Amino acid sequence: MRQQWVHGDKARIHDRAVIIFCGRPERERAAPRAVLTPCGLTRPPGGKGVRCGPMSNKLLNSAAKSAVVTGAGSGIGRAVALALTDAGWSVALAGRRPEPLAETAALAGEHARVITVPADVSRPDDVTALFSSVRECFGRLDLLFNNAGAFGPRSVPVEDLSVADWHSVVDVNVTGAFLCAQAAYRLMKDQDPQGGRIINNGSVSAHAPRPHSVAYTTTKHAMTGLTKSLSLDGRPYRIACGQIDIGNAATDMTEQMRTGILQANGELAVEPVMAAADVARTVLHMAELPLEANVQFATVLATAMPYVGRG
Ligand SMILES: NC(=O)c1ccc[n+]([C@@H]2O[C@H](COP(=O)([O-])OP(=O)(O)OC[C@H]3O[C@@H](n4cnc5c(N)ncnc54)[C@H](OP(=O)(O)O)[C@@H]3O)[C@@H](O)[C@H]2O)c1
Image (cartoon, rainbow, N blue to C red):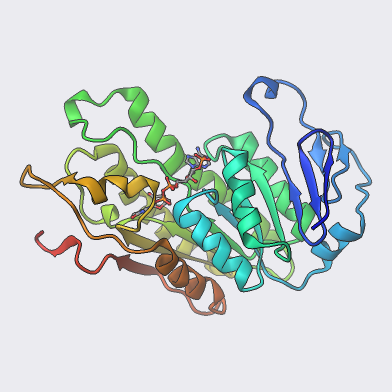
């Protein structure tokens, strides 16, 4: 596989996949952003006349459907990104850290059509840059998997949770999900053919809390409101919105399920988990339905986890 580094470490061109790093280190955030074009050339913000090489033309002319997956560098986001690329989708991989995104891109294989776009979904400018890159590279957007999320500090009682910790969860799980949905909605409304699908990643915590999870549980209930509002407001524009509520997929976030997690009765217990790939198969099914059909809510959980039946 041929690899070429262009413009420092920001753009890497593979034979069959273009990987673009559009994010910037924290220390450069005050500087004007150079927009990386699909062929790895840079142009100033607002600059005209993007020149694209043969590789990017392949991306732009592709008949493949295109998707944004946030939180694509790990866990469920990575599993969904790989399911989509395996099914022939063009996928923009987003998350804060470039390295895990590059790992997901590598796992997708050299024939995958992927771009990696480091972005903090709670930052409006990052989200704008992410969706601009998608429009530039893929021409349209068919799917947003609104997946990036944070649990926040574990086992902190309500009375001890700091406002900063509350915001760290709300900013990602609610504001970030809204910003990405809004940017996707704008693209989907304006593109021709019009429409697309947004799949929000809720949780079984959108229905029932774990002990000491007030920020996470509140935000996941809020996700249900986002899903319902987007579903209603999207109807005139062929924008479908559904939600997947997951319980105990084996990821970094659920590490404690395997070692012992606090139960409602105050005891610690190890809980069953399932593979993230089994969630990804459900998301792929939701994604590939025609826009005339929508899975409004789907619950996928580890079969024997304590959830149904009061424990
Ligand atoms: N695993 C489960 O059983 C389960 C159950 C219910 C719901 N969920 C939901 O599934 C989603 C993914 O979780 P996971 O289990 O796969 O855990 P994970 O591996 O920790 O994934 C979280 C992802 O979100 C990204 N992220 C966090 N903050 C971000 C930000 N500000 N901007 C952009 N990306 C951000 C992280 O990447 P960076 O750190 O690089 O940004 C990471 O890739 C979450 O919304 C979670 O609530 C999971």
